[in-house]
Each structure stands twice: as C-alpha cells, then as structure tokens.
Image (cartoon, rainbow, N blue to C red; front, side):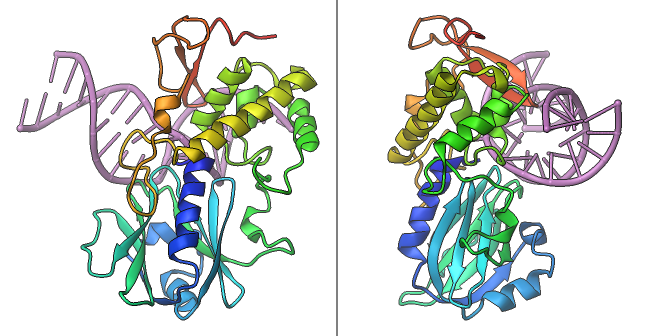
Amino acid sequence: MPELPEVEVVRRGLAEHVVGHTISAVSVLHPRAIRRHLAGAENFALALVGQRVTSANRRGKSLWLSLSGGLVVVAHLGMSGQMLMQPAEAPAEKHLRVRFALDGEPAIDLRFVDQRTFGGLFIDETDQNGVPLALSHVAPDPFEGSFADDKFIDVLRSRKTEVKRALLDQATISGVGNIYADEALWLAQVHYRQSANTLTVDQATQLLQALRKVMGEALEAGGTSFDALYVNVNGQSGYFDRSLNAYGRENKPCARCGTAIVREPFMNRSSFLCPVCQSMS
DNA sequence: ATGGTGACCTGGAGGC
DNA sequence: TGCCTCCAGGTCACCA
C-alpha cells in the first residue's frame, strides 16, 4: 500500500470531510475487514453509532479517528485499502467492506474499500499520549514531533541486520515501505544490504534526511500512484511516481551516473538500486 | 535477536 | 478467447 505520504493524504481528507460529523449508521459488509475487532461486527457497529468524530490522526501507516466518547477507530489500509467519501445513494463499490453513514445535509458516507482485505478497522483505547494501545509497538514516524533524530540514529546503528530490513521494521521507524526505502537509500547512496551497524553517524544522518526529503516531496505531490488502487478520499491519484529514481526503474539509467538500475529479490519482494553509486562501504 | 519463509487475498500483465 | 505464472506499495506467525 500506501506508505506514509499516501496515508497522510488520506488523513488530511478525513480531517476535512469527516471530523465534526456524527456516525449515524455502520454496516460491515465483509467480516475480514474487522478481524482485529475481536468483539465482532455487531459490537463494532453498536460502539460507533451516535459517536461524533473529533479528530483524524496518524502514526506511520496507521490512521485513527478519535470519537466523542473517548475511544478511537483505528484503520490500516494494508496493500489496497481506500477511504472514500461518497454520496449516500452512490452504488456500492465492488470491494466495499465497511460503510459509515454520516449525519449532514446531504448525507454522505465514509466507505472503506479494500480489494485484497489485508487492511482493516478496529476500535481501541489510547495511552496517555493519545496513541492507540494497539500501536504501542510502532515507533514514531519521522514527521512526528515526538520523533527523536539522535535516538533513531542510535537504534539504527545498533541493528545487526541489513539496513533496508531495519528501515522496513515499524518498531525502528514507522511509515517507511518498499518504495520510499529504496528511494531514500538511492538518494543517500547506501546499499540496501549494508549492515545497519556498520553505518557511520554521517550515513545514518543522511539516510534520515533522505527519508524526510523523499516522503515529504511525495506528500506534496499527493502521494505515489501507479494505478487506481491508491487514491485520496475523493478517488484521485497522486503523481509522485514521475519523480521516482530507483523504485520500478529496472534497466533504466540512474539519474546520477547513467548505470542501469538493477532489481533484486529481497524479503519476498523487490529491491531496486544503482549498482555503481550505491556501493557497500 | 536475526533472518528466512509462507500465509493472508484479489486482480492485472504477459507468455503461450 | 483461455490458461498459466508471476507480480503487487503490508504485516504476522512460526521456525531455525
């Protein structure tokens, strides 16, 4: 899915269109979409009806809506989840999983649509910092105020594993997925298989700056999109894919040195890199 | 603690 | 046209 910039695009849409509204009805159309809500669909709906949405929040790739009663509804988009605003009378999408009817004139729906059902929703409580309990193992993301650069650099440099594996570990830093990991590694000229504990402080610092730059620019562009699966709440795609330098560019010239970008299997997925300017050090 | 693998799903693309 | 295989932006559990 969606990595941090795409999820933030969705969060902003929810803040604009859902916050302030009261949930008047909830329909769960596929039980798998709420599998993490152990009390089941009926309980899920009952807990939400009548609640007013007070804010839309995010840590890493997880979203949550805060509710007037003090609970939150947490959403993870998985690989293919979408949050769409639709007129109440609009026909059901093929992969519509959960539908929230909101008050207002005209009445609108918030719809969770998810082809592959890797995503899902559940109700949770928050800790003293306002973070859902279920996300306690998720590290802050690099755009949060509570993200400590020095601490991240220390943790990263203590990890005895390949640097890309560490970047994808949401307990080390959240929000980074396969695309932005490859893009940041390309920008910082670090090989994805370099052991994290061999990075210099300077390299780790460059890498963090690269993550912020790449994800920040993607956010400004409205997110990365290759197809209609990744859209904002109005169903529109971003255009950051025009700016990618490594991801998906197998056999195309590196923008820095002209060498063909290489694709290699890693962690049951693909890694893209320039074999010349991203060398092991 | 790390790393390797498969599982969870649907559908699009490309080869034959 | 169909059938096959491979691929996809994410996690999670389990095993060495």
